[in-house]
Image 1 (tube, rainbow, N blue to C red):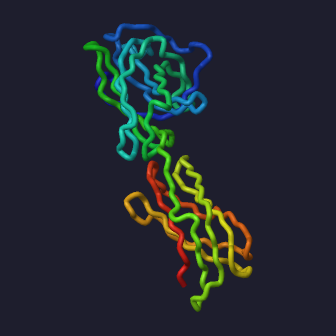
Image 2 (image 1 turned 90 degrees about the vertical axis):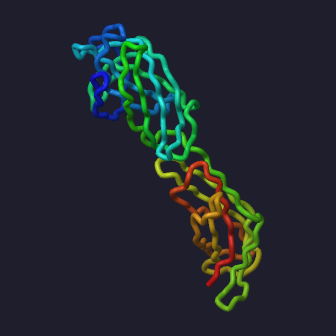
Image 3 (image 1 turned 180 degrees about the horizontal axis):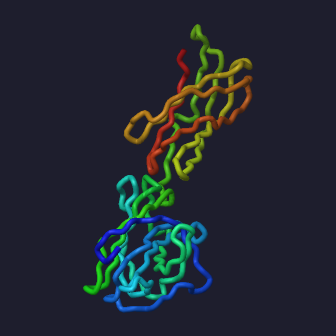
Length: 267
């Protein structure tokens, strides 16, 4: 953008070149005319993030300059997970290359992953304002943080363990008794959050049958029903232990506390 004129954003991944390719110079901040090439990326190998931007002079040549940058990150749940002002010097500039934008001379602001708060969405928007005293100030611009922001863990509590579930037939008689003793879970945060629930126990009564049916309900911290269904345990005899991992709940809200209840299946 030409000082205060907005530009179109292109998001891409950068790699550091081994040697300087582009003509560069260190300049005073009052010679800066254009801000371009801003983008944001996650660096899993170094457990941090990079915020890139480039500065050009009146001849559209890349330059390095001492500037300040106000940064804020807001995730798609409208939570501000990061806010800071960073001072950039000429040492923060380097040659970068991408398939989309080619070779560019950019500042690279590194943000430790631990500085960004965990929130309820791994997507968001990164806002930056570049300025230096009264010499130069660009309008705030933004770029996308896609599937890379930290999300909060979830908590799952199973009520009433150990819980005894009677499996009844069509006539209401008890055909089996299932004792559930333990519940664990795996929370997968990547892309679409999902909760995999594993429960285990023992069949304490009943003959081997094609399956025993157990019902469950999952509630959030406000008491809303999030998911309910049935689990089918196959070919268990009295004394058989089991571990079932068939409960998978999608569209889980990061940071939420969930409660799991088991119940008898009703015909």
